[in-house]
Amino acid sequence: MPATNQTTIYVGLNDADTGAQRFDTEKYVSILKNVCRGYRVAFSVHRINGGYFHEDGRYTEENTLCLTLMDIPADTVTEIAKDLCAFFHQESVMVTTSPCSVVFVKEQI
Image 1 (cartoon, helix red, strand yellow):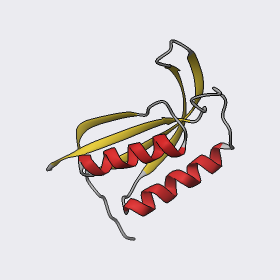
Image 2 (tube, helix red, strand yellow; image 1 turned 135 degrees about the vertical axis):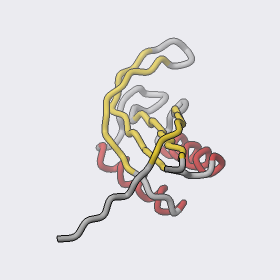
Image 3 (spheres, rainbow, N blue to C red; image 1 turned 90 degrees about the vertical axis):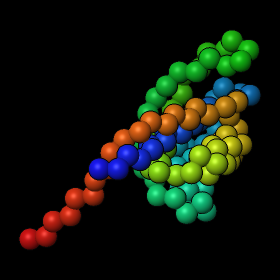
Image 4 (tube, rainbow, N blue to C red; image 1 turned 45 degrees about the vertical axis):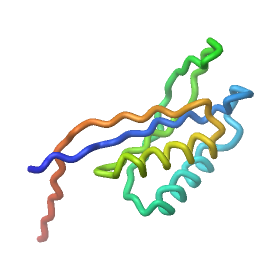
């Protein structure tokens, strides 16, 4: 199996200034899907909860979207992360990358 890169972008949903979530989570999911469609990348998204320490020391707990991308060029990942950071009005978003194996299994009856 050839190795591929799995990239995950974690995007909090609380506004960077107010510390509160401004819109329903489904609205953010819709925006995220449109961003991925615009970049023509396949994706998975999960809703999770997380905590974050702002640069000024404030701590917030928030709903977070976890966007998983497989074998996407690093520059494209960076552009997607920048778009989501701006659209969701975040101080920052977290991007992780790790090698993994991918297998597509098909079966018919």
